[in-house]
Image 1 (cartoon, one colour):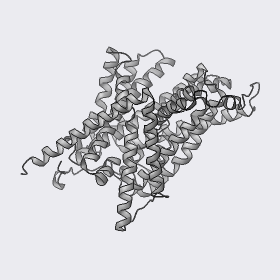
Image 2: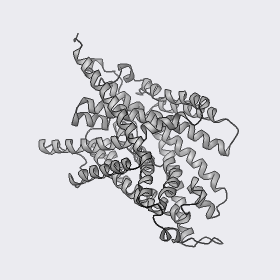
Image 3: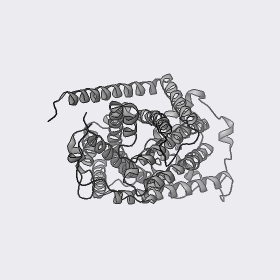
Image 4: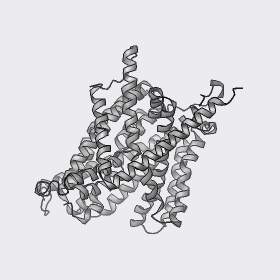
Length: 458
């Protein structure tokens, strides 16, 4: 499709209103959501303590992806992020396909997070029905996103602080429990880990791997937010550097505590953090951690709505989506893009009432593994663009160390994840559905570009 001319671009532009501290905390908190607070238990059930292998493999992959994205985002902060980089590296159809794929994933996830947060809150406060709570969440966070990126960044800043504080307290209590420092509470030690490390063998590790990968989805939003951050070169570099220790401390540390305290057959793994705190005899633990999980889901909803709106705005700016989606409010917010991105969330509330527990699982089956494709596109784009920059002598504010070896290693690791996924029936169906979706989007983008090119210019 043809790019919009400068004269067609709106006079109002996206603003660099997000503070560096907000981007850094978004980097810390973007992947701390229901995938960790609730999904980690499913991983332990599938693989036992060997789930740590799944977390190390997926953690290594996301670290490499974020380093690659950080290099490109520091050099070219853009609201289209990896979609723009894929376009520059592999052409317009590739860039548009990645952008639309990620947008569709987030649109579905936004709806799921609103309903999930409503369900969790209803479990501890059964006063307002789930559909009404979901509706309230959708309205509130739509308003926050329409108010401006500064307000969005501040909400995410405090959400991230709350989540990080909860994880730190959990790790402190878990360490005290394992070391036998809690009064009148017997320590399980490391017996649960050493007794049967991999009760389900490689199959369990493979099953847990896809649970873990879904938990890491959303981390890439940092590269989208870089376009509206003050001093993006410095801010992105600082945010990316937090990824390594965040993965090691928060994810690996938390899952180690859970696997050590709760055996793989424990019913408490349905809410693993609450299960550990109950084992430590902390009063009110289940309610407290449920409320933290609600906050984590709402934080993810907020961030995903922001990311989805900026991605479709970027697609419109590049002529890959209807032009009206690039309209900005006086506050520099792509208000139409926000409305389109959140619309399905409102529709899903009605669908869930009509067809309870049937609509969203079907949609997740379609978009569940799309993050793998986005991560793969980021690694391939960085491999191409870095070689191009080195050949042309282009200065890069942030350079990924170990290039090209680490980028290639990331692609090999991603290939192994796909191989593992195709070996298991449950994940195989999901991967095939995602590949069919990608083929459909790519065909539509290619056809749209051909149609636009064939139209006579005025």
